Image (cartoon, rainbow, N blue to C red):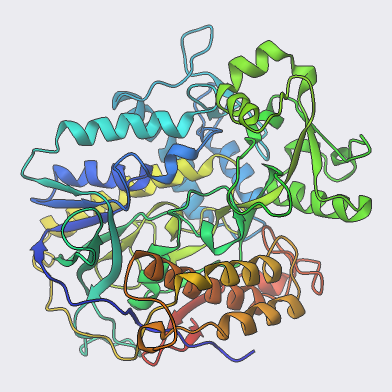
Length: 563
């Protein structure tokens, strides 16, 4: 398969305004909010950019909880072991050790910042279990509204200091590109790196329709979330359009593990025509004892894995795919009736209400479920401090590839990863500042190559190609079809007189979706084995030779090459 070529910048108007900061944080989920709060007291001026309202980050949608070894009978070593098992041999043990040893303190800091976790009879944080965990270590809030509670507490902390001259919040702003300076020709690297110079962004709902501006800064922290809208069906909110990964890729950063997509096994099945964000039935439901049945009423997971319904998510998702193929059905059933109506309504009030909105009373009937894209284990490759391969560019949360998740994320490690590594990144930025690192941004320099703009109308075509070719089950044939379909998408819509499109939010987002879909399909085609969230029917077993990362980056001419 010939390596694809991608543009190094979005087609956009020249910035109509400019400001400056010591650090820019992009995103308002747990990672972005944590980074901004930590940086506020450590560098003179932080600018926090969020795509929607401050409280609209993806963290809000996290139902299950946050994992940490908080129980006296649990240990970070046990948490490490479970994470490495789920990661399918590709997790970085050093990164995982950082996560599990620093995680408990970071969760306690969340409490200090106002997060109210559910408590047990002893007054301590109530802990439950989810798939892949061999101990009760999942802290939750509001039963099944953990992310919403964490977001509420952190947003309140930001709101309390919004008038502080050391921090500025820009809402309803889509970051377009990461600005970079001239390559460092003094570098000994074969590919001289371009340092960060800031970001361009488009503020929506204020000023003109194309209110494009530039923020000049020597540090940019990406916390933009995952790749939800790359796929036809996802649990991610509509705003998860791969903006951070695409912007980092265009800036020259290496991306890794893109092929490892976690398809949540229990997403409410709404029919073949359903698209966009789908209601998630939290893994915590199975943690409390719910069972998976096929459409004939047979429980099938005990024959698939020793942990049955609590097996790692990729195991459960693949088992469901096989079971639906065997029965000719489009879904399976999640049966929680034996847990009792009172318990279900008390423990899972949000899920109960959401199901009722769709006419389902799960206290009386099983729930139809099927896998859908949920979490992305890959992203912008970072070190243990969130630093990417581009000087001054950091990535934290789901947009990053820290090495924690490997081939498959362990349930409820995502919020913890965002929390722990955002804290570490902020501390590293502060050290850089204190040690005399660059305090002003270099002069932005245009990168070589054409700019890109994909018509918003092409998004459904892109999603169909990615979902059909790089879904839960893949092959060289399906990935080849996907690559061909993506290559056929026009990326020069801004130059085409016959395409109805212009530089605006929907087109910029669709361009990001297209670029990341292209890179994801490329990574999946290169990995000739099955492991974790990547399953190929033509290479159905893991291969020791593939116990390594597939990393990609753009050459100066836009060729997507392995690193």
